[in-house]
Structure formats: C-alpha cells, structure tokens
Length: 362
Image (cartoon, rainbow, N blue to C red; front, side):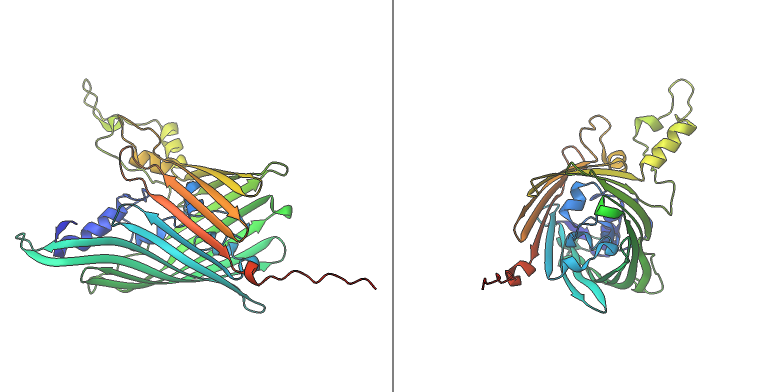
C-alpha cells in the first residue's frame, strides 16, 4: 500500500509507465502506454512486444493480427505477467473462423496497479482507491494467396485512475509475407492508430502510443531453430535519453567540456536502440528454449556500476497434446523488479476432433 496525494495520483501512474519501469518504453509521447507491453510469454522471452513467426500461435495475434489463421479456430490463450504482489497485467484471447468473413480473435487485456492509500495536499487520509486499465480487442486476419496475409485489431480502451477516467479507440493494421515452406516471414505493423474519446481532463486530449514496427524471422530447414529480428519505432529515429548520471555524460575535470560520442558511435547507438533479437530452439516438438536481447532496455535500465544481464530475457515452452505452456523472465535491472510472464494455450479442437472411421474390408 502507498500514500499519495489524490490529485497527483494519475500523473504519477502515467509517469511511472512512461519512465519505463516495466519494459523501458520510450516515454513522454502518449497515454494508454500499457498497450505497448508484451503480454505473451513467448514474445517476452524473445525480447520484444511482437513477432513475425507464423506458426498458428494464438498468443501472437494480440500484437500482430496478420498472423491470425484458420488453424487457430477454437483456440484459447490466457496470460499473466507479475511485476509485484499488487502490480500485474495479463490477457485472454479466443479465436473463431468463419468461411466468408475470415478468422477472428477476441481479446481482453488489462493492467492492475493495485490499491493505494489516498491523502490530500496536507497529508490527511482520504481513503483507499485503485487504478486499472483495459482494452477490448477484436482481431481479424485473412490470407491473400499463399504468400501474403493481412490483419487488423480494433481496440476499445478504458482507463480508470482513481476518480479520473478515460476512453479511447485504436486500430492496428499489419501485413505479413511468408516464403515457401514457412522458412522465412516478414511483417510490417502500424499500431495504436486512434484517439481519446473521453479524456482525463476536459479539453485536454493526449495522443496514443502510435508506433510502426517491422520484423523478420527465419527457421533453419533441417535444424529446429528460429531466429527473430525486430525493428521498433520506424517513425522515430532518436530513441536515446541523456541520463545526467551516466558517466559518459559527465564533464571532463580538466577541460570542463561534456563528453560526447563520435558520429559513428552515436549512429550505431541509435540504430541498435531499434533492434531486438531472439532465438527459439525446439526439442522434439515438445520443449522450446527461448532467448532474447533488447539493446534499448539494457541502455535504459542498466546500473552503470553493475550492468549484469539487463536487457536479456529467457523462457521455456512446453507443448503436450492440446496444451501449450510458456514461461518467460525479463532482466531489467540488477536487484530490481524483473517481471515473470506465464501463458497457457488450449486447442479445444482436439476435444471435438474424431478419428476417421476405418475402412471395412469386404
């Protein structure tokens, strides 16, 4: 439980999200930032918040609707990410396919900030209050021939921060190219195109966290390994933050000039802040080992005296008959809060699938 002045609480929550306390998101550019978090344990383990891997995984549909396929029909996925005992977020998705309309995935994603003890400017208690945000998603996907597929997510967003409420609408649009034998795929996505319908304060409308992303994945033909490379924030080049505590930004004790990176070094740093890499190794189609590296997370969350594994993520996936269970762990800061992610996927089609009748010999 925390004590905060009630009028300041919404600003504190928004600043906490935008500062990158969960996933080191670039801050100061919009509200509803919970939409940018990775909800799937598989995606989290691979280091990003979306993938371009087209293998009928319903947990990837929330972040990349162009991956929605008819094979997801009657599949259910639920996920939970625990940050602290009171601070958690998650999702639930279910898919249906219709012959003429295409394939759909309905999802609900939420984030719960927990309960707080309110107080006025003088410190007098005003009672307990809570904060949470939700998004109801309807995703649609369709194949355009054997190589291309498209998809879109429509989102109805609701945010409740104590007595401050807001509603918004947003759309994601995506396209994926898949090469023959599914050995290579590439996706391009535009996320959170929309606006606030009802703002926290009358007359003030905050922008949504719009982002364009691209990603590729390739799997080796004779070895069960998938490599994934993502490029985030196509719409914005400079993602850097000049931390005054960074030793690289301190003034030279002799000349008094602030140290700065060279042109090539600065270009390389900016480029790498967009890149996320991940790999998945499958064993006997039952066990998956996943590793990821996010340079942006590492640069923003590392401790200068002890960088350790900041920016790295890892996880496991287990597939048994109709069930798939995934776990992921993200290392954001040494000794800090490092979220754990769980996802369960169930293929209910296995319940209703019947064996083909054996032919009788005459």
